[in-house]
Length: 416
View 1 (cartoon, one colour):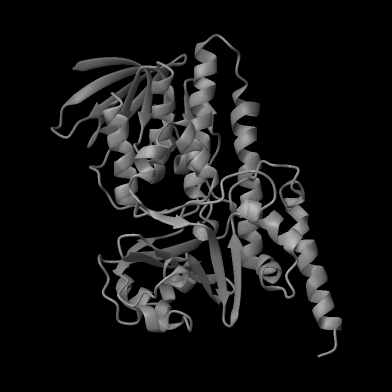
View 2 (spheres, rainbow, N blue to C red; view 1 turned 30 degrees about the vertical axis):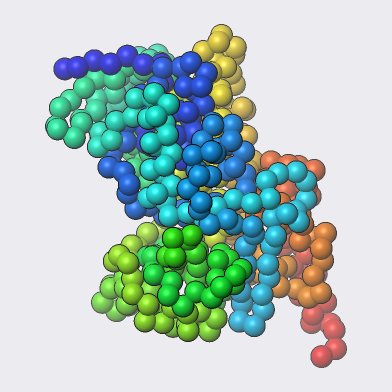
């Protein structure tokens, strides 16, 4: 059996894996990346948030992505019947990027992977991890390549960025139930033939069909648009008696007063994909010789597009902490990795939960708008969830519920 020896094995070539690999390579660490699929490949997570731009810039991946001319995302729009709330990332609390992208992930991920290869990193597609064993912090990973050949990869550290493949959580029994209620989604791409000119046509929107059910509309610069419906799993399953994903998605589009004309009868570019009970969690995010990043550890919900940001945040952090450790500096992985990541995840978890209770929607659509509150919420939506100068970060566990309660009381007490 062929044996390879590297400093770090990265499992998965999505955004988290590419950010990790690129950053470590820049710092003269010997890397091997194995990716189970062949790129380009279809994956969900097409709306980014500004925090990711910090990671792409630091990993020296920004320029190759910027050259692709993906649709710029300057904010986000939330629609509830006649009510509309627009967040502008340039009007947020604190520092940070004012924009990001809306991307077909097949093209986006492939651009990064090809750039990683161009940099000289050994990235192997269609290679599946079969077994992993640890002796101290050193690991031996058995991988099967596209020709069916087995090889041993010996590494001082593993960064598992395998996303929904969840390689180490599966092999090391690290999975644990998510604390979020079960939700599912169905999505596809359409040729957006009825797209209007200007901002209206290109703006990402979340159309609330019921308190817990919403439609996403993510326009791309190639003229296509991603369309998806999200809701409690029972509701999503009820959209089609025949369990036909295309019928279910068409039925969801029918419920949208705002988008029915734009998308009624539009041809789906591929058979809609269903992601059932998508929220994920793990018992621990690291161990001797490995760290879990991105969706291989936690995935919350697509409503605020936090998935890729947590993937790149954890990918960059794992890379930096490995580098620090390799230089003989002691690393407290519990504090510097798990506790740090959990802080940001806890903030977004609150926002997801309060979205589905309707409390956050109360704040979004309240009139007249409170610009100060809006800027602070906007900073969270942009991904700056570690900035504790923002009270909507620091006091996330009660500020939304309390404000929504007060606004609802005012509404009840005010004369019609």
